[in-house]
Amino acid sequence: MPAPERTTLDAIVRAGRDVLEAEGLAGLTMQAVATRVGVRAPSLYKRVADRDELVRLVAAATVGALAERLAAVPESADPRRDLAELAATLRSFARSAPAGYGLLFAPGPGAARPDPAQLARASAPVLRVAAALAGPDDALDAARTVTAWAHGFISMELAGAFALGGDVDDAFTYGIARITDALASAGTDDPSIGTGARRQASMKARTASATS
Amino acid sequence: MPAPERTTLDAIVRAGRDVLEAEGLAGLTMQAVATRVGVRAPSLYKRVADRDELVRLVAAATVGALAERLAAVPESADPRRDLAELAATLRSFARSAPAGYGLLFAPGPGAARPDPAQLARASAPVLRVAAALAGPDDALDAARTVTAWAHGFISMELAGAFALGGDVDDAFTYGIARITDALASAGTDDPSIGTGARRQASMKARTASATS
DNA sequence: ACCTGAACACCGTTCAAGT
DNA sequence: ACCTGAACACCGTTCAAGT
Image (cartoon, rainbow over all chains, first blue to last red; front, side, top):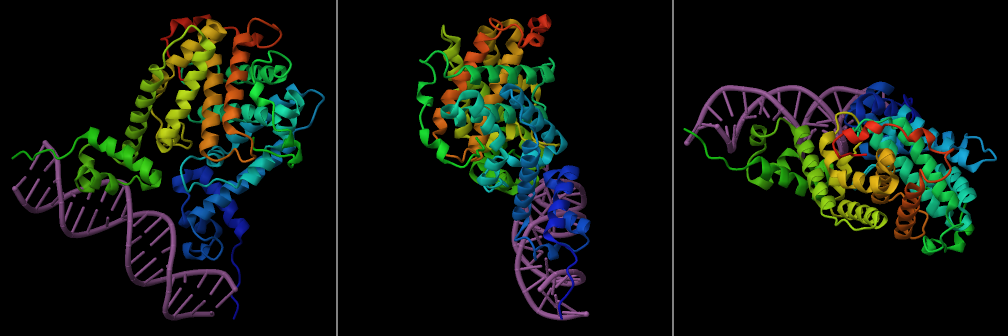
């Protein structure tokens, strides 16, 4: 006698994202999600192994949404402009879903990190623009530099760590401009710096994607 | 009839740090800490209001330790070298206490963030070097840029987000070199970029400290 | 004045019993 | 084949009772 399905994994993950943003990670309980999808908590275990897996699925869905947003940034003839646009898009995404964003690079073991392949897919546009700006040999290092800066800035901003006054928007504009300068000029000046970075010609053999 | 004190706030916080690194944030329970200091869990409430406060105290102690390490970095005649040294020290500190480091800019509301003044004190050396490199007017923005990059890089590294191969140490070296270049040359070239950043002459009136 | 056992609320998780 | 109530372990927190 088959019983009707009263929810789906998709609905559970969507509810999880909503609860996460509304109540924070501590509020993301099995009960809260179950109530939201209209079942009792034990029923969730038919679709997810445990709470950790639910959190991982929420993180994965968040990365997917981020990848979509970054991929939608139009490509112009100016890589500098594109990089600034990508950074602004990342920041805007983080502001729209701060708790979910916080999951992406969450510290600690057994954390909710989405799998690397997905992060790589999300950062593909950054790698492409970084290659245009810094050249193919430095593309990976350049992408890692700008991604690290953007993520660091955003996570510090969300954590309220910019507490000394000054305009934070200005700092963001300043930062992306400086970093773009640096990546664009690397390889064309001062060969004594960054020499060790020009290696790894095999990088082009990889799929065109990178978390950094 | 006074009862003897069987522990101290200091011992509790120290035990909290140890448990945090050994068992992760989820393992940082009142019971675990109580056992470690030799009392029962309810006794902890004589010294800390609740678990959240304990976590905050652990985070504050971690910032204090970080401030000490950064302040111990010797000042040379070369700001570029000093900045690289500060970044390497931050990275080394994060590796020695990854769970504690993860607390510093933890996302989410009600988080364990240490108070801004403490973060500011820890970043004072960075602000000083940034001023030497980028000039006093751009010091704050420059410090924010390098701090954001370093924190972003470290948190991504700890999260295992650099998954595309390539040498991560090389990427760190590349990043700090590029950023140092960018901050050093800002204000001395291309006046069309970063124009908006040169403002705020009042910054010098602040105490010489900044989280960024 | 601090420490403790007992108690309560809450959460994750399991499972036998329903349909 | 999925859903549920009941149950258990575990944790945070309170509090009356000890010393």
